[in-house]
Image 1: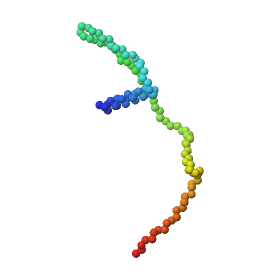
Image 2: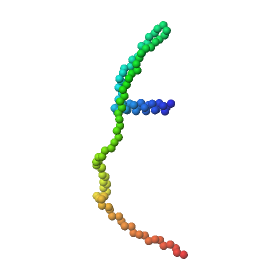
Image 3: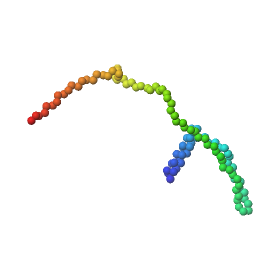
Image 4: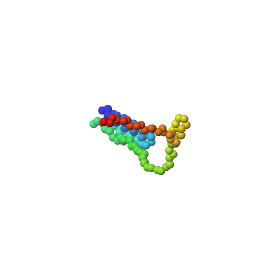
Length: 105
């Protein structure tokens, strides 16, 4: 039961959003008329009546592509001390360590 109520609430929110954004336009084209009710010796009779009419217009979504030039921002990281990141800092050379001598038997 909760799931049905939740789905109805979501549907109403989507409908309100579509109308508020202008994607959905609903206008009434025909007024409603209530039926005429009369009583006779045989009982109650009802005649006529008319349901209201509505015109619904929906927007459309077009998907396409176009070619354009976009400037892409660049990022430059400066190290402390004014070192220039384009010129790599010299790395200290590691001196090779002699292999440990094992016990030869």
